[in-house]
Length: 324
Image (tube, rainbow, N blue to C red; front, side):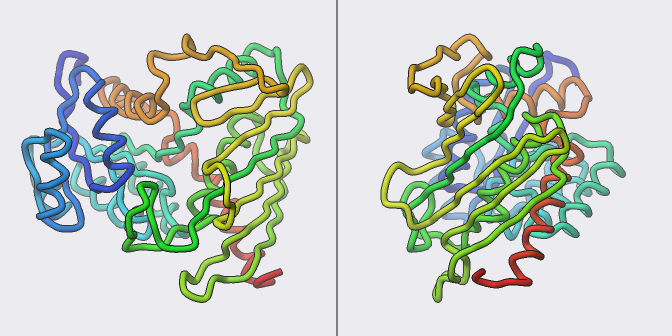
């Protein structure tokens, strides 16, 4: 595919993150959102109207049969990710799937095998790799000016009911380990530049209705000695989101999504790091560029697979000592 050709993308998932991708794709030259799919045709039509997309369809299967769709972005419930990723690859479509790739290691490995077999672009939405704040830190690491000694990360929400990022009722249950911890587990190894060699986890009580732990603590150690402490909670009544403290040999930095501060909370200008200040847009730009250039994208399935191996090992620990 040449730079002049339009990349035609179908967007599957009409929720909070589907809307973020729709907005991001509108800002990328030479990209057309060719179709949208949601949980029902009625919802797809409503989403298509809101996002100014010309075609709404009822199912992913219809999209995969379309000759005028080159690629698919999946912003669907976690439990559907692996199966839908496999379906896209088998149908000959490039695919970007929102985090997590899967909620089991076996499913993640099946997706990796399908990508290797088909040779298609297959990318996972590990957005932290693309946020300007984290890119700024990575550039210092790659220049040899900075080495991570510790990352201290807080992932906090107030979500005692099954609601999405927009406060709307959800048809599926979120998960601290397979969804939210995946961001940090992958980012830590990526920024440390070394694989994770030790991982420990404990969790609080299982919620009687949601069936998940509402609080979790994770410790990680990279092969080069860097460590990471991750606290996760759905019980936090305060600022929502994930906040990263980088403690390094030449400075301390606080990353809050696309923004960055010193350890003393002085803002750092990251506006020149990339072509946008929106991590989702930068993630989508990488997906489109990889399709056009016929190359492996940053955050490819192959690159993030070790993250899911670590999550699976942590799940085994938690299962062996439930509530411990």
